[in-house]
Image (cartoon, rainbow, N blue to C red):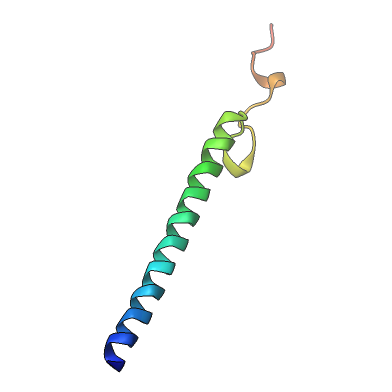
Length: 58
């Protein structure tokens, strides 16, 4: 009986870990999606600014 109880405790711990990792993965994906929507290019910020978008006329 003790082995069965230990098995159930271990199983519950593994399920908690899997749920936690799944939640972290969702948060990462949501963060990436949010960064794309706002026009940022990830954590580094914008790649180009409006000032250097066009070439200066000669």
